[in-house]
Image 1: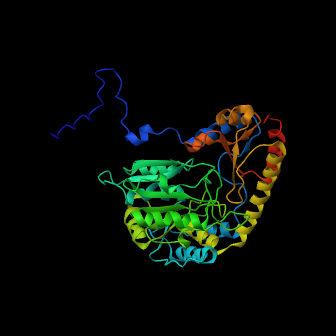
Image 2: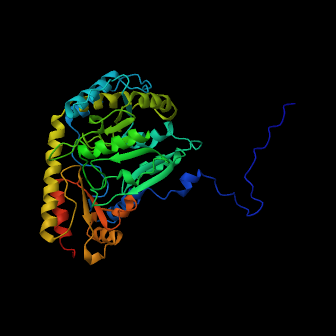
Image 3: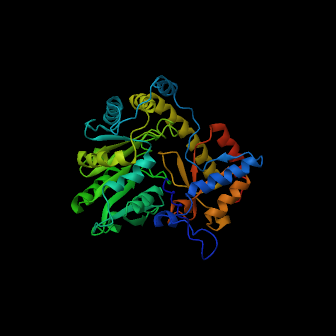
Amino acid sequence: MPTPRATPPTEDTSTTGRPRPLLLNPVLEGQGAYPLLRLDERRKELEENGRETFDFGTGDPREPTDTPIRQALKDGVTENSRYPTTAGKKELREAFTGWMGRRHGVALDPETEVLPATGSKEAIFHAPLAFLHPSHERRGVAYGTPGYPVYERGTLFAGGEASPVELTREEGFRLPTRSVDPEKVRIIWINHPHNPTGAKASYDYLEEVSAFCREHDILLFSDECYNDLYSGEPPPSILEITKERTLAFCSLSKRSGMTGYRSAMMAGDPELISALKKLRPSVGVATQSFVQDAATTAWRDDEHVEKRRRIFGEKRALFEDFFDRIGLQYLPTDASFYLWVTVPQAFAGDDEAYAMRLLDEGIVVAPGRSFGAGGEGYVRVALVPGLEECKGAIGRWEKLPV
């Protein structure tokens, strides 16, 4: 007779009559909801109730992706689908190095100094996994706050220690190296043009951070996802200063209106790129072949980016004129598509209350506290709606007290 199959074990319900709570990774358990996710859920709620909304909350621009990019995507769909490689297509890597040469005057080897990723978020999140471990004596990661939440989350999931450094208006929202403990910190993240404030970094500042990292053997990671969106002087790349123990993270999401394509590049020190090549087969590969074709077209062309710069410049000027007219304070910038606005006195500096009041008018902005300590008392305005929508939102906004 066949052996009876064993009854699968069941969860212990002897105490409560119900299954025990599901155990999670403690890092995941300790994380709240992704900040801008809550904002998006509130926006959807308003729209489901029939309210017209103007969404300046999530950094997802509405301008159409350039036609040749979309055509390259379509043309890249073949009858047979194959796994993409970790290194991605040579044509993609060469297109990116061509852009880096034109835009920043930096020569990169497409074989050893460049690696694609499926969007900058996952690249930023996964990068610490290659260089940190709970057994390491020095496993701190310094990053600015307010800032992009993924620097912290990637650090914690990699077993690192988060070392947030509060950024201030007086410091130009630049991370001061004097606040970094080199005995504990292994990686420093910088981000310019800065999310959420739009602040730019000077060459002198990049030189300072680079020298500090070199002196203390700290890895320098530079998030440069917004550095091709500007109206004035082009923002620099850290790779113009150094490649040594340094990586730049670049993206097509904002530069080329390809947020949904998920295409980014990591570039810099070949030793660091080699380490990431060992890591990435375990966590993912390059984007789909047809997305790589679209990305190749995007990196090769600069004209469509110039058009996007002009559009964002027009929207920025429109809001700056409005804020100046009503006396609402903001951080002047000519880069990124963010405006960092001080909550007016009428709301006692409460950014969440101000954001909720704007929601009553159908205007969605991101409360500064969503980006961590130091963001309190501000709201971030992402210039993503069209120009006419911006004018409509201003018509409602100007009714509010300052």
